[in-house]
Length: 432
Image 1 (cartoon, rainbow, N blue to C red):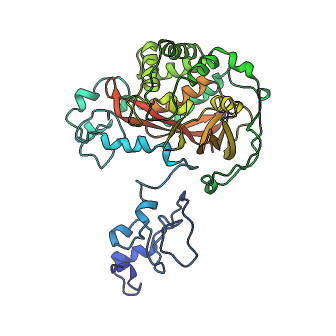
Image 2 (image 1 turned 60 degrees about the vertical axis):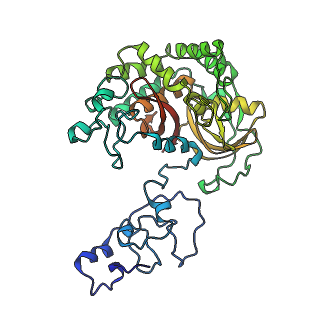
Image 3 (image 1 turned 30 degrees about the horizontal axis):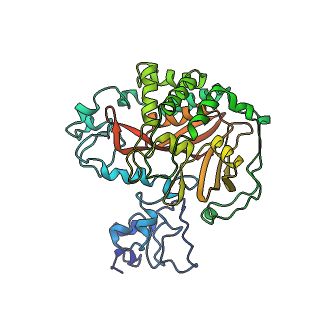
């Protein structure tokens, strides 16, 4: 191990190195599923990320170990921002691998597809809302990002408080949601996050004991269900829509825009200068949700709607699939086998939140978070709101007085309009 002044006895340590012995303890949520090493064999950063300097350890995992060259071999993998998990409960890598990998295709010297993205110190030039203030914009920032289409200027920034306020309005406006008597769940066994990869069926009975299917005759439910079977779930097979299937997309958007839920969302975003008319809003929703892009080798084999609501299979694993109606219908047909859950939301009415494990016709889903008992327009509204207001970030909401967080990711490989991005995924990351 390289010599470091941090191993110098305290009595002879210079003032500049003495501070390393006084670093405060920091708490780190370690979501790695690597087995813990026996006590005393501290050669790994498992459960040690950002701890204070430990002179008795064989190697270090504090924030300054890269500077001193005494990090454990797995420090970069477990503890750096590029690798560590940060969600309150884990999401499998398959959920975001395409969205994260797509950053490799972003032109580092152009704002193409990057307008008003979050600041990234690794980029050569920037396209965030404050790049003009700091004088580090890409040369084409003005030409590509100066219009008020899509994501807004910093002067139009939507605050956390505003998002929480509008999400409460959406919650109250969801009159099409299930009532308590409409759904009976049999949650059965809850497991720990460390067990989610075991693929063990801890629940011999179905998740849904009863669902009042009269819900499905409501216009938005019926229009939503019509869309679910329009996709080939395995990525790498191009989607080809018939005229009828394209009409079903329009019918769904038309029906949800009649609801108080979507009227609340549009009114809010219109007030925030995001959209000038309802038609502009609807057109953008159709592009971001139903526009096709390629997750595999086939051109146009995926979309935000297919991934989030209908579900996909990639590399032998389930990705997306975050909708309770889809889950119930597939379970009813014997295609979904409910295994367990790791999180049950705090709500005592619907919509509720459940993070579960299941097998979908031979393919496993490690963590599938979903609203339970919500109307289709409710989910569509919240995911759209978060994607527009917090693209690629955690979006902090409030529903019925309880906090809820949604993570979205943008699809960066291809864009539409003025560099606007398709939805790669959207899912619940926490309800507490």
